[in-house]
Image (tube, rainbow, N blue to C red; front, side):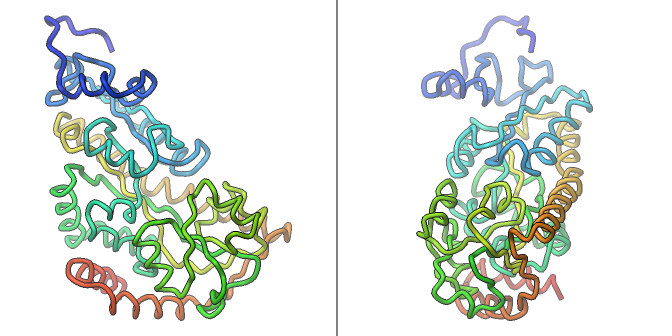
Length: 351
């Protein structure tokens, strides 16, 4: 960005905070480098140009990077309306919790987050990640575009100071183990890895699993050493992390319609012009379909490879209805207040 021709201004408090606390590499990554940047104006000394940092926790080859944040960055570059999106995949700007805290603080502009992680800040939104709450991505998108979801998004914005631009499909989560899992009873005695978050641990109870919390980075070794017996993730994640090297069966339980929310700091959003807001919103929204297609294509390819090679047994005759009924009974018995109300709205949207 060319330097402003106006008289240099006193650094903003946000700029001073960034300079004081962040190393140079992070400053460059998050857009905190320009002391002349005005977080309350159009960015870049009032010329309307702005650079947005857009982060996620996935590798360069994951669909949420290739067909997600990079797609948004490319679309905005083509729009040529003064908005540049710089992408930071693979947790370059911190883990999920740290990144969202940075988005709320205004030090990272945009992020890709699961609702279970965001529920630590705004509990009702965790319903979107509950086991068998949705029957698939079509219902997920239909609900997200409804007035009920508008209430959820507004409440989230008020609580966090961040705006949800859209939802992307993360894939259906399935079980892997060294034996088939066809019905809830098959989980008995298996130590299943779940993310260490209240929503995921409750999902384990809902389907009858014995949850063992293991950091994502340690799952492969824990499976290899027998510390855990199985785990659950979408097919592309299972393959990308090489869990199929240490697990013989993948059971297509589809026990969770994985989703990721695209969030932006509200002050940064308000600093954009109306045209820039519309363009960014449309770019994120249009990426929804491309991202889903990219992910589902990869899933089909991986499943075909597993079936053809025989290295992994793909278990397709899973009694999803038995799992789903068990989960629904659990959540109706344990949820209350806003979470129960939202859960019932989600379930009603499937009818």
